Length: 80
Image (cartoon, rainbow, N blue to C red):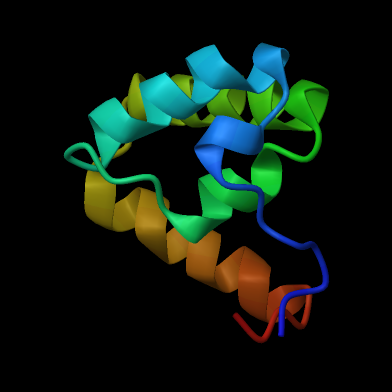
């Protein structure tokens, strides 16, 4: 059971709608649960999308980016 209850896109705040649409473009049209949960806080959602865009536009290849993300998650004790 998630600690943050996901919000269906049609019930998400107006400020989250463009972020949901941007997320759908990254996932082939699917609104993944992560985006539904981030919709609870459009400010946080935007900060995440800005960060993700910066990482994707950087010089690190996808595999290295994923390795960094996994290492940070492990260090932080993330179970997901």
